[in-house]
Image 1 (cartoon, helix red, strand yellow):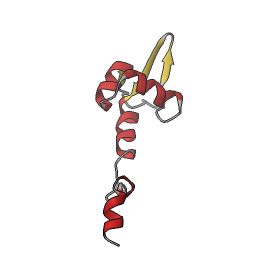
Image 2 (image 1 turned 30 degrees about the vertical axis):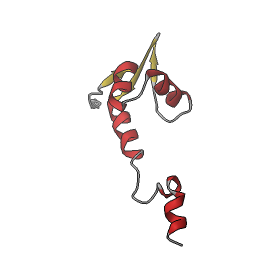
Image 3 (image 1 turned 120 degrees about the horizontal axis):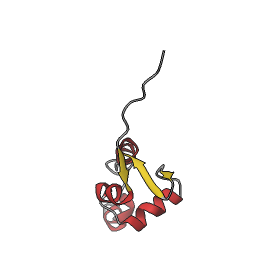
Image 4 (image 1 turned 180 degrees about the vertical axis):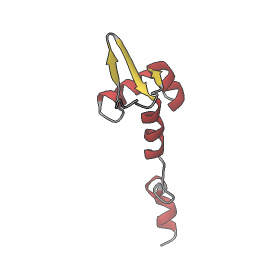
Length: 78
């Protein structure tokens, strides 16, 4: 019995950067720091669209998690 893998949608680094709304340089930094998995095929780097979507969901900000940006609001309430 042969197992047929799901079809993988590959994105170029330019396409992945566009999808994330970041520059290619920032994308390369995310890859280099291990935040985003990437694959090298010869001289070409590709990313799986599913990995990009998972990264987007992982970066979702929870309500109330940005309080550190507004210290004066917390101090005024005291």
